Image 1 (cartoon, rainbow, N blue to C red):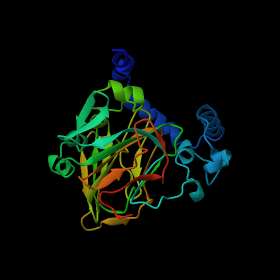
Image 2: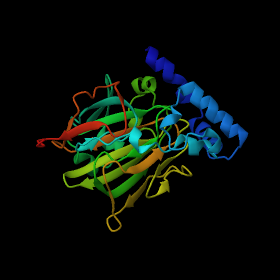
Image 3: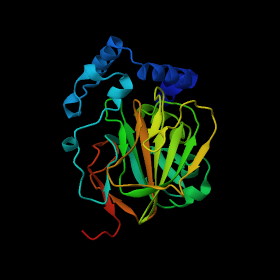
Length: 285
């Protein structure tokens, strides 16, 4: 009951208007105001700028430039394993997709079909497969990388609401990840398809991919579907594939018998881009 009551104000807030306002500020070159905002953000969230390629906060023209800053390669070494963690963040949930259901939080599930924007054919490819949901808090590095090598075949923009994706809201709002605005990125690997879903949230001004740029610039409220059958693009494990503004969530789906998760991976655990996420089912080590 407490969780439900605590998230009730989010149903009333003008989430899209707040997000658009934050987005305008984040991409504005506001000089000293931008630098001041970056300084306060670093202090509040204890951001470690020694990891950044460019640690000079005065050189960032916009808050977006700071927020999507690149990290030094040596700070995020790539594990020698089949599947790596694609982001810095924390594990929200992971496990098996049973009867088309994905665990959102204890006592709350949502359907893979709903996450895919109603595409039951796409969702069926992950029947009895595996999922992992990773939460990126505001303090985290906000570029998203490839967990394994793959060929981009499709991207779907699914309009939706913009609830926060912090742990309390995830526990309190039913089917949150299937309700929020999101971008579904479909890849094909030598061992079958896999999906990365970039989920938007309150104050997340944009979701962008390296092949398209900002996917949701106007929020027209219409589902859009891009196919890349002809101009398919290959990505290697660890390559950047997208980025967020402020905190958000990535949901990954894999087919049955494709991945065995790192046994250290449990809900609530902090994770880093490049660390071992899992091995291939039946893989000879």
